[in-house]
Image (cartoon, rainbow, N blue to C red):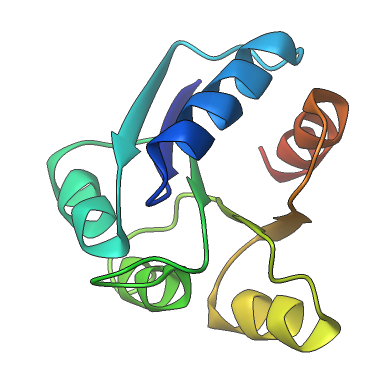
Length: 118
C-alpha cells in the first residue's frame, strides 16, 4: 500500500509512520507533506492507496485539503486529528473524508480504521 501522510508536525509524521509499520497494514511506501497545499501537489504528481491527513495545519488545513482533493481524486482519506467532536467528525465526512480517527491512537486502532477504508 502506498500512503500519503499529511501533517505539519515532523515528529507526528514519524510516529504515524512507525505505527503504520507496527500495525498489520502492508505498507510499501509513505510519502509526506507538511500541509494541505503540499498534499494537493503530491496528489497531482502521483497516485496513492490511502491518504492520512491532520486537521490543524498552516497554509491549507486538512478540511480544505479534503475539499480540494475531492475535486479531482477519489483516494480514500482518513482524517487523524485531535479534533474529535461529533461536529468536526461530521464536517470532515461531509467534506469527503472516508474515515476519522482521533489522536492519541494505537497501532491496532490505526490498522482497524485503515482496514475499514481500503
